[in-house]
Length: 460
Image (cartoon, rainbow, N blue to C red):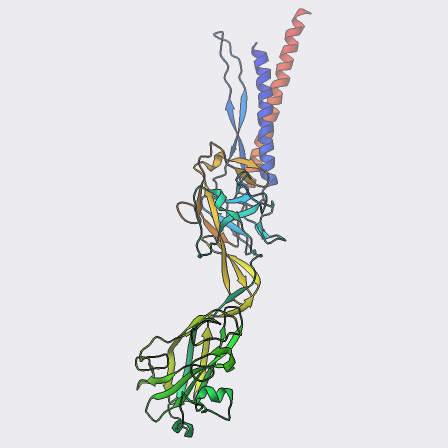
């Protein structure tokens, strides 16, 4: 009977609009949820077969849930260094536990990037989901596989130990006074005997006092600091200085020549006051690269770190291009080296390409991992789960794991969060129209009920 179909159509209208109200309620409740994607109930009519010509049977309506996962939310600045947003396509790969991951453990996907460091040092978001990435390999690279999630692991920024960087480069800026007189010691100076400048550094009652000395700290492989000096003594030859490099104290190194002496020779300057490295012999033959090599403790090489030090060998590359000889007071402008003693983690930074690095209090920055970005052909087909995350489904298509900003994957925005895609004005408008539609559907039921009462009363 048509009245019965109308009654059922009214019921379907109540059910469909109830679902629409539930979706709108979820949207409004999550207006401030990071990276929340709005849901919408779309209505689709139901048509029944019309068995008798001239009569119409109502089919009603059904609600179809639709989620707008692919819709980009506004990227907003954040004060947290580990707050992350994806600008473009893709999702963070996350898990529900930080350690002991197996292929059977579920991997979820989210754009909720409010990550922080938990008590164990892992990066977790507000839903306690652990951020996944490719860990740094021993050779300084990342083992990236676009289809194997088992290559990923939870990113930990605390359990790293201390950081040490042995000195490998020294940048020296100084001026040696061209106008100074040749000292009396220059006449008896001999770099290979007790009259050397290295001997004077160890015992001022012996050796030859230099005219100018530049001291610098050298960090070894274990973070220890050693003092190394570069000394100059003016000769009677114009624009030429005798030079030595030696350790203070001499016991820090083992050498074949004078105690503590690491290098000896002459340094020449051009007539315009710039250094002439092509004729200088401080580092060996004329024109030799300004590099000082120290072998490891206990090896046969000399010079080497003293056996009692028990440290690895290293090379010091000197940049002497800013060493000048002008008619002005001898002075050291700056001595810069790249070494760093023992340091502990004090912060975390993330680059746009997803590389997570730890910042140490000795100014060192160490790479830890690279954040993976998962993409799907149809991200709107993902299955929503609690924690503002999603699970892979067949309608979503094949997942591909990419590097941030490469191959269509979105770039990482550090110190940023993606806002919810909910528009309150649209939701409130939808709330009003849903309420009216629900009331109208209820009127269908009451009207159909009255018509059925009239039909029943015919027999009275």
